[in-house]
Image (cartoon, rainbow, N blue to C red; front, side, top):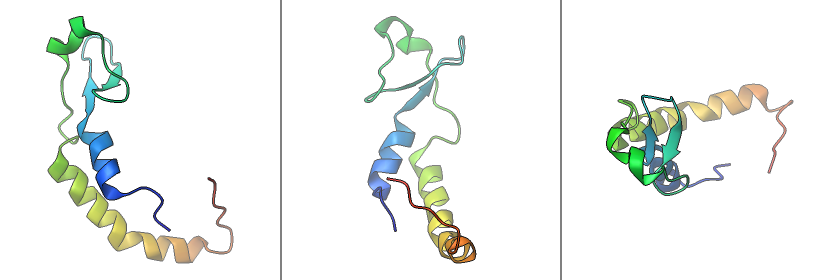
Length: 78
């Protein structure tokens, strides 16, 4: 069922940056911020590789039971 590799999900999470002045979210690769605001950007406390990996482990441990419960009404969107 998994459509996106964990490594790609981790890359998306650890590249995020928050502009505390505007609340805008950037990604250092996929949505780069303007150069002049880079010094003020921050990484959210839950956007670390370690925390992302832990969230993914929890997801993998629980997704089968959730999918089984909703199997009759599940619609896959690509």
